[in-house]
Image 1 (tube, rainbow, N blue to C red):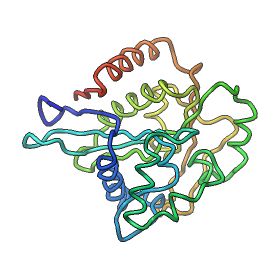
Image 2 (cartoon, rainbow, N blue to C red):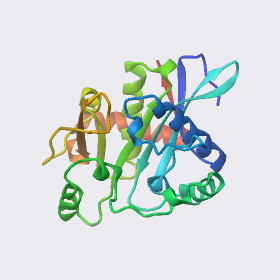
Image 3 (cartoon, rainbow, N blue to C red):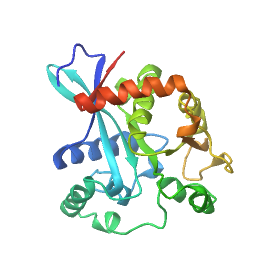
Length: 243
């Protein structure tokens, strides 16, 4: 995983159980003191793990420091069926005593449905979706505080969506309304039939918004850019993010 300098980053899919555990702990530490900390189930093992991780493809962002790869970011794409992470999540949760969280199936297909006030929104989506199409939610997006910048955030969001479109035709993101403009640069818009809302668990009382993007909302220019990124990702099994 050779990097040129400290402002170059590598994005790759997490490919082993130890690597996933490393980033589940990274995720916990990142969210613990953030406005989005309400998503955590606090525990002594300091690990953020839940049922949706079994149905997710997990992605890591590294940079290089003193010739060592250092974790600096993470996101997951929650899908409709279990992924290769299913067994890893089961093993990790057994080791840390959190199987009561990971082995209890939830009522919703995607995490946003457990937070958005109208629980019927997801059901309505599935009445309209073609059976052969796949959907997913990009979630748990976190960057180390020391590495946060608008440029890096936009690079990761663009990359995450390009990678997501390898697997799905419908994408959801639940975020703070203040952050929504970053996603809208890449085709996302407010989910039809939804409205902004305030999550009572967020101390700052900031507004949240549910975003949606289907493949039909992606411009031809973006599709071309995404295709190049997808080809690079499939060929190299990673993406270089150069700032």
